[in-house]
Image (cartoon, rainbow, N blue to C red):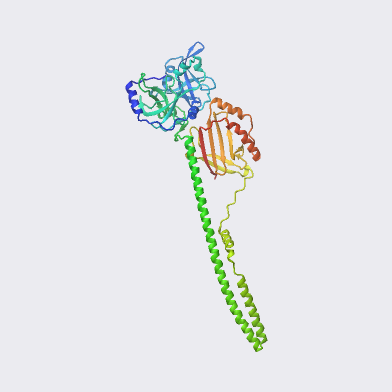
Length: 521
C-alpha cells in the first residue's frame, strides 16, 4: 500500500533532480539482491470471520534480527486502530505463515517493528551505515499487489510463500519528507511494496520503501524510501542491534581485476629482481675471473723472478764450488756443492710450480663459492598436528568483499597434512587445501581455503535460497569427512568428495573474506 500521493509539481521537481543523477556503471548484483530477498516477507493484515482468517491488505517487511521484522507504520496502521485484526507474516520460500505482533510503532517516520510468535529461520538483512551516492543503482524488493492481480492469485495464495518481486532503478537524491529522512529513487514499486527494502549494489538495506509520486499517467514516477539513518536509531531504540555494514560496496569483478593486477606487478617485480640478480651474478663472475687472472699473472711473475734469482745464486755457488775444488779444500767443496744443488732444486721448483693461465676459471669459481651465501634450507614438513603452526589470521579489507559476515581475527592451527585446529581435516584438490562448510542453522555455504606458502586464509560465502540449500545439504549427507591424520591419499579423496558440493554452488560467491596470517605470539 502506497500512501501520500504528491502533486504533479513534486514529480516535475523530482524529474529535474533526477536528470542530474547519472547512473553508476556498476549495477546491483542479481545474486546479492536474490540473497537479500531470502529475508523479505509479506506482512498481511488479517480479519476474522469466526475461526476463519481472511486477508484485508498487505505490505512488505524484512528481517533485521531473529524473528524481528521492519515494515512501514502505515502497513500496520489498521491493526493498531481497529481491534480484532491480527498480522500474518508469510516467508518468501518454504515454511508456513506465522502470526506477528507490533512491538514498536512510529508514524512520525513511518516505521514499525514486528515480532513473530514463532521463529521463521530467515537470514537478517545487513543495513548500510553509509548513505548511497546519487546515481547509484538500487533494487526494490517486495510484494506489489498489481503483480498478484496480474497472476490471478487468490486470497488464499497471499498466505502461501511466494518469492518477492525485484525491480531496479537509481538513486535520485536524499531529501527530508514529512519530518523524516528519505531517499528518492526510480526503482518501481506499487501498492504492497510498502515496508520492503531498498537495496544497494551489494544487497544491503539503504531504506524501507514507503510511498511514491502521482504520475497521473504522464509524468515520470519517483519513489521514496525511509532512509537507513531513520531505521538504525529506530531499531536501537527498541532493543534491536541489526547487522550493520559500512564498507564500500565492491564487486568481485573489481577484486579479481585488482588481484590480477597485483599478480602481474608481483611477476614483473620478480622478473626484474631475477634480471638484477643475473646481472649481478654475471658481474661477480667477470670480477672473479679478472681477479683470478691478475693473481695468477702476479704469482707467475713472482715465481719467474724467484727462479731467476735462484739460478743466479746457484751459478755463483757452482763457481765457488769449482774454486774450492781447485784449492783442494774438500770440506768446503762438499758444502758449496750441496748449497749449489739446493739452489738448483729450489729454482726448478719455483719454475715448474708457476700457475698456468688455464687455472683462471677454476680459481674464479672457488672465489665465488667462498663469498656466496648458502641457500636457505627449506623447512622440513611438519610431521604431525602437535607440531603444527599456531597462527592468527586478520581480515584484509582491501582484498575482501563483505556484506553480512562478521570479520573477527581467526585463530588457526595448521599442520602439513591439512588438519586445522587439530580437529578439522581439509581436502586436497588441484594443489589447494579446502573445506566446504554446510551449516544446518544458516542458509549459507562457506568454502574455506588455506595456502601454507602464502599464509593466506580465504573464505568464500554463498548465500543460497531454500531449494539450493536443500540440494547442498542432501549431497553433503552422502559422505562423512575424515578425521585428521589420514595422510595425503585420504586428503585427496576427501577433496574429490567435496567437488560434488562445489559443483552445486553458483559460479561466483556473494562474499569473499581474505585473511593474512601470522605466527601467534
